[in-house]
Structures are given as C-alpha cells and as structure tokens.
Image (cartoon, rainbow, N blue to C red; front, side):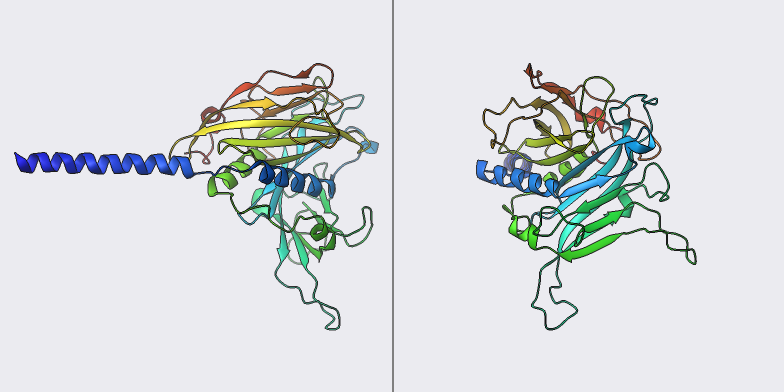
Amino acid sequence: MRKSMKLARSILTVAAALAYGSACLAQNLTLPLSSAQVACNEGQLGRLLDRTSTTGVSLENGAATALTTLISYSNSVGFYDGLALTNEGVRCNNGLPPLGTPEFYFAFNVNPSIRSLLLNPRRPPLGQVELSREETGSNLVKPSDGNRMILTINPTLASSTDSGLLVINNFLVPPLGSPYNGFIASSTKPGRGLSEDGLLTACHAAFTALDRKVFAILQRMVRVAGRPGACFLDAKVAIFRGEDPHTYRIDAYILDLDGAPLGRAAAVLQIDWTGAGVLTSGTLSILPACSGGSQTGCSTASVQTSLYLIAPVLGGAERQHGKSQGVVFDPVTGPSAPVPVDFAALLGDTAWNP
C-alpha cells in the first residue's frame, strides 16, 4: 500500500513539474518590451524604409502592378530581413486590367559586413553593409518580365544620391556560358549613413525564436490596399514587437503614384499560441489618428487605407485565398472596429504552424 501511495505521489509530482514547465515555456516564448524599446524599433524600421525603394514596371508602360516592401528583424542582435512583392492588384490608374495575377516575391536581408579593411591599405578601416537576396524565398524572373523588381537602399550620408547605393534585383542567373543579363544577387557598400542613423546598433537583444518566426510569417501575410475598392498603391511596411509579449505592431506607409508619402496606417496584432508555439487566434486592430506630427503608435494616413492578412501562397503560382477580414483607417471617420484572426485556419495549408 505504501509503495502504491509513493508511486502515486511520484507520478503527481512529475505531472505537476511537467505542467509547470509547459506553463513556463509558454510564458517565455516571447518577452515583454518597454515602451522605449518598442519606440526604438519603430523608429529604426521607419528610417530604414525611408532609405529603401523598390521599383518595377512603370506606369508609363501602361497598367503596372503595385509593389509592397515589408521589413523586420532577422535575429536577436537586430539585423534586418525583408520581402518585396508584386501585389495581385495594379496601381490605381485608369483602365485597370483584371485583378488576380499571382504575387511574385523577392526576399532579402541587410547585415553589417565583418570586414572593415578596404582594398587600399592607406584608407582607414570603414564599416561595410551588405544587402543580399535570398533565392530560396524569391521568384527570379527574366529582366524583361513585368514582375521584375529592383531593390535599393541608400547607406550614405546624403539624403539623395546616385552613387554608393546598395542595389540588388530579382533577375534570373543565366545558364553557364550565356551572356550576363544584369542580375545582382548582393551588394556591399560603406554604411556611414546607416550608422549615423542608428540603424546598425541594436535597440535590445530581447527578440526570441518565436518573435523571428512571427516576423517572417507576417511578411507573407500582411497586405495593404491604399484606396477604396479594388485599387492599390505602393506601400512600405514595418513589422515589429509591441510591449506585451503577445502583441505585434504593423506600420504601413502608403505612397502616391508619384512616390510621394501619404502617411502611415498603424495597427496592433494580438496573437495567442500554445505552449509549443503554435499560433492559434488573434485580434487585428487599427490605431487612431495621431494628435501630433511626430507621434508614434498612431495613424497619419491621408487616404483611406485597409490592412489585412492573407493565407500564405506559393509565389508566382497561386492566387490569394482565405483572406481574413481586414481593418481600415479613414482620415475622416477614423479607425474601423477590431477583427478576429484565425491563425489555425490561415496557416492550415502550410508547414509553418504544425
């Protein structure tokens, strides 16, 4: 009898320890951040997007797909990765063709280079920055295709320049023995401007593996429409963490047809997950208008802007399906009501949320 009671107590003790361990694991999958850390991340990504441009087919050649560039953090140290894409919808203009062309993806990362010694030994050491494309996450195309994209980052001290730029594109690598077609897979330049802008110094080291997983997944899910109806504008999107361990922030910067900024639609995404890090459900909310020009954590868009999540698709082959309900910021009426997000359904056809 005593042996049975001892065994029962042992089983209960082990079960309690496992339950406690699972609770701790679920609690520590992400960490809380301070308001200053969140503001630092928001400012960094905003300044990097200011220096970043993605170009494709121009409107001068007729209707052209709208482009979105999303960027976030790639590791706990605070370096960056991102995704440029062609939207299913074309830019807002007259004579729109039918919507529904599959999205094409162009994945990239931005990292300081370890090497600071330059070719000329008489030049002092200088920090370098490398911009590289990730072919495993990209649709590479012919230089003449309508889905071509060129990504540029200005790492210099000048606000506008034609030289010293980091430039890559999504052109196919030609077969061995064929003429060079202009493809650029990586670019390394001095990063004085990025350094002066505080973009090469981490705000903190609190990002976890789950944070980085969510950042990468949201790059494939977050989409922006820049005006009412089936009409798109180019957009730049920053994805970062909120203060609460279960919140993520999205800043969508809208660009007019001439590239002029039209402000920012800011959103908060609350996400729930299991102890094993499986995303389950969430809530997407748009943030209200700013009361001052230099505020963060609020919306400044001067045109009606909708932000929504899609189920990830195979770039270049599949059209969007299973789109969740989105949220809208209107400069006159303000933010729409929050909407629920079913991550289990949106990610059900992927291998990213087992």
